[in-house]
Image (cartoon, helix red, strand yellow):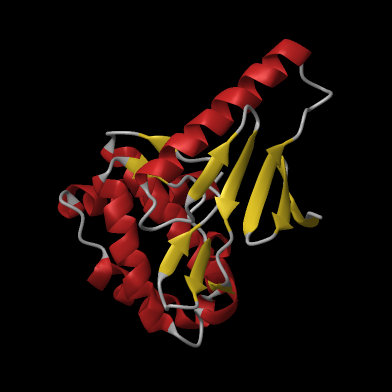
Length: 194
């Protein structure tokens, strides 16, 4: 019997016998045909990305039309353990490099979507907002989201976490991504003035 463990804006997350079932639920405010197309395309995209990232994410077991069966990863959310352990961010940087070198952005790169599993490996979860992209800008935005997450949730250790992350973050175009990150951050600061 599956037990609900989370409910998001787009999906219900169930746990059943060592696996997670992510079921994208219909939205009554959307036209039925549009809703089904969106749910189907987002599920297909997420399944494709999970298949490309099986080394840094839970393994995809089965993809349905609007649902995914994914390996359950037992461990701790980084949200709960990163502040007293900022050196873990180096592993996050290493895994983010793998993702970015495969031209994939997470889209919601926060410590709530990263697990340290029982083997001390980092696993990214929830690829609902992910995409395949060749744009440096999109990778920089991924890093910006991570920076915002550590600033809001892990502020006391923010500098140590970011330093550790950068030690591990070494994608093939690191220089360009970090230069673009500066542009993204300036744009964010300018918006805050208004």
